[in-house]
Length: 93
Image 1 (cartoon, rainbow, N blue to C red):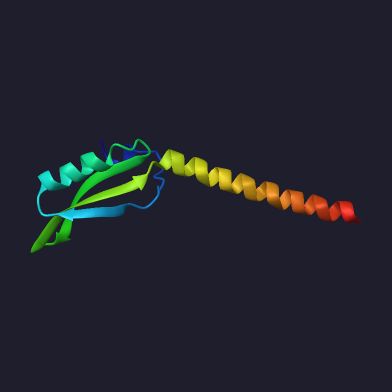
Image 2 (cartoon, rainbow, N blue to C red; image 1 turned 90 degrees about the vertical axis):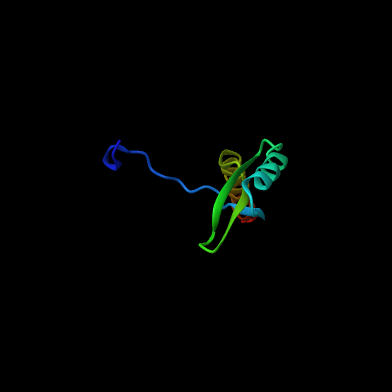
């Protein structure tokens, strides 16, 4: 499959936070298992660092679908608040 065949747009999710840095994959995997018990969090192990000092980083972030719903709820609440404030001003006159 070439890149020309891909039609989907890439959407950014919430940023990843580093939970821990480990010298071996086995240690990082144990930490990943600990953290992945929560269903609302995504967990990954990422091999990173400078060429002479590599390590395995365990990263987490909230599930993008849940974060999207929360963002929509915040927007809706803000819109309701603005609308109520505008209606209150209109009634005074």
